[in-house]
Length: 250
Image 1 (cartoon, rainbow, N blue to C red):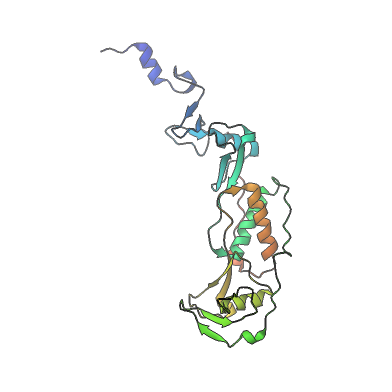
Image 2 (image 1 turned 90 degrees about the horizontal axis):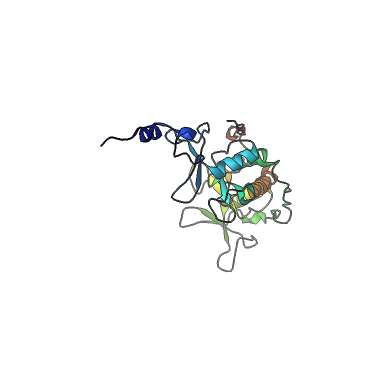
């Protein structure tokens, strides 16, 4: 069966020249809008389609999104890409990292979003308690079933009616910091030996902020980390360079 010349022309034309052109917009199976943007670094070679909500947010920011950034629809409608319906979100840093690495990540967030939010640095005086230890805790030691050394310290806020013992590595770090550990802080043994609680074998680690949060919330969290650890000695080799912002261009 012979095909018409008109059909052949339609099949060989692409973009605005095609008879099937609908403005470069298509809808995905999940309900998002794809825009034809061949110039965009996220555009696949075969289609050149980029999510419209990404393009709208990038146009507002004046730069491309970072790999750890996403765009959230406030009202849950996936094709409602009005700027007022979009929020810039950022994924968390890796879980269980050194406080020095958390500081580097926090400074990156502040450098990235500092001009996009007016939140103030949180005051930590209400949550940080000075470490007031009775030095007699040294020597009253026994071994935990998991291999850690625990110390009799009934005065410590981590003790309860069920136990009056505290992990020795926690006490050593708290004595060095001059304060009690915060709920999201943990201690890591550098050499992996659980009862080697020399200060030089201990690292202060911090858990990440909640996953998938708004950029403004990430900025608040980052300023909290900086206020908490800016005076804590750290290894300069762990520093992470602040990533530059790629300018938005077509």
